[in-house]
Image (cartoon, helix red, strand yellow):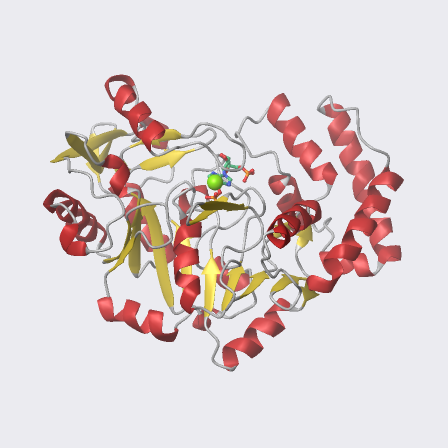
Length: 434
Ligand code: IMO
Ligand code: MG
């Protein structure tokens, strides 16, 4: 099994996905793998993501630009499955430019098929949140933009190159959204002409980055280049397989890496699933292993030590124990071939650590993740001994015995080998088991 990872590091296209509720530490793994990749591509989500990379003393938070950008050997691509906020892209670009990172169109490409997030989408997202739904979204307009895409009301970046027809469609959509916004009590909406003019002006700066990214990726792939797919969010937030309706509005799982880039499924060679050694969730929705009541204190301790605050919205993340029932389901849905573990070091110095190995629902015990009634399940836990600190180590033989037992338990339960272990936030704090 390990040899798959080896082939991968030599020259295979890897898909990295988060297999919890997001915030698993994907950017650090992408940054690590990008060293030997040629292209890093985002395939879904938008600037609801918050991807943090730490190199030396410097911390970089990216929301939209792929996390391979700090490696000069890579071309970074925003694939068609991503919903695109033009202003956020330009802000990120400017920040990177200020640090002498090359973000020229030569190494930063955007699909002309990305759907555009307009201010209307953000207003609607926020108005819905305050008026009714309370999903706890990031307020970035993600749901309304994907909604418009499915309803065939959206505009793609390439449509802005045809301003006459695009404007007519924009106006039709504007008036429809205006009614919805009024209904939700949001009356302060900038005039349509102002919004449109602003959009076209901003677009001029995006234009040089636009390409047919599917064409680009296929050509490069045929030429033997290695592609790394960067997932955003996590499987439990997937629109189909997540905890609906408390999910994001895209398919976050590995299968979508193909749809969201235009590289066929046969080009996805290796799926790496990333999980923390515990679980976090931002926003509302069921969370079986959440540390509440007698575990509330230890939950707060983990949250503080693990700095569990959202890098997009700054919200405090809810914290819970590792959930193997959910994890195995996520491994299946994604076809995970190797696991990456993060934040094991955060749990060090706890006396004991809990792992959820089954759910009980209406008196019945099961290891299958249910599609409904997740808010009613009771967790069955195994408790294992804690471990001493090993922060930053790069050698597997320096890992405490209890950590190796914990890893073995995850491998046995999921049937998937652990291929990478992150031991800290920094780039080189990592053990690769190949
Ligand atoms: P990364 O890529 C954690 C959550 C929101 C909310 C739900 C829907 O950093 O792991 P949305 O704005 O997408 O409509 O919100 O999804 N959410 C995330 N949680 N990490 C993320 O991204 C997230 N992106 C969205 O908190 O519960
Ligand atoms: Mg996040």
